[in-house]
Each structure stands twice: as structure tokens, then as C-alpha cells.
Image (tube, rainbow, N blue to C red; front, side, top):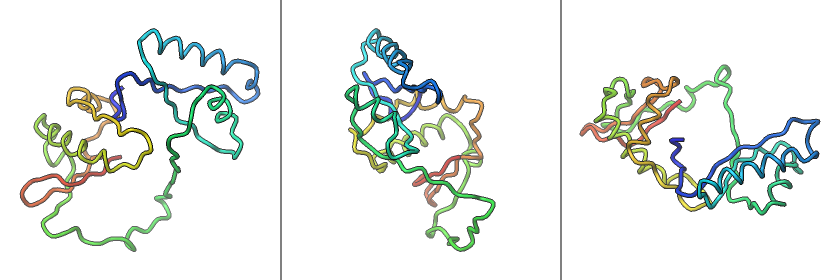
Length: 171
């Protein structure tokens, strides 16, 4: 993939077994196949993301039994946009800052390179207990722009009067 958290030698994987079919060895068999796949490619570390819906989630026991250790905990949060009143939080941006979409900025290779530099500079600001991920080279980064869901109007940039990009948000 083109994810910013790609690291050499690391394999991100997903594994799931339908309720009612768990605890029958299916997950273990799938896991062994995933390990075989990773080893054949010379990968030396496996990582996954677990969603905990219950305090005693079977997925955690499954992974801990196989030597996995928790390195981070994400807390999913959501906002009901149909009931949220943003006017309570609205305030003007700092002097000299304007908000523009990638489309307004001009979705060119030069703009994408400028975005690559900004996005790479923001990565260390993301809290993690893991070793900080490597940011992908430009050639990997731009692959996301060819995905069908990419919309240059959904990427908003904070731009200084001098044309420097100093922040972003994306949907």
C-alpha cells in the first residue's frame, strides 16, 4: 500500500473469523498462512490493528498468546454532523492565513510535491508509542491521488500570504 506508516520488513495484516465460528482453529490456521506469506517475502515484523468492543476481547487473547504486544491504543471518536453546530467554535484564522482546497491551489505535480513535504513534516506530530514510521517517497505518496475516491476539493490547506502551506485537513 501507500500508507504513511509503511516500514521496510514490516507486514500489516488483518484477520477475522465470523462469530459462531471462532474458537475452532480457523483463526490459527489463517494466522499461520499469513505468517508463511510474510516469511516468504523476507518480512521480519507483523503488525495489526484490533478494535476492542468488549473488555475481554478474544482477539487480544489470540494475539497475546502468539507474542503480540500492544504498542498503541487508538480511541475512535465520532461526530454527528447533522446535530453539530460549528458556529460555537468558529473563529477567524490567523492573520495572513487563507484556507484553500487542493483544487483551488491547482492539483499539479508541483502542488503534490509541496503537499508531500507538508504531510511528511506533520507525521512526527502524530502520537505513537511505536518507532516513528517512515514517510513514503513521493512516488509512493502520489499513488493515492489516482484512487477513485480522491477528491481535490476534500483536501483543505492552510496557506500563508507567502504561499507556504502550514496545515491541512482531508476527508
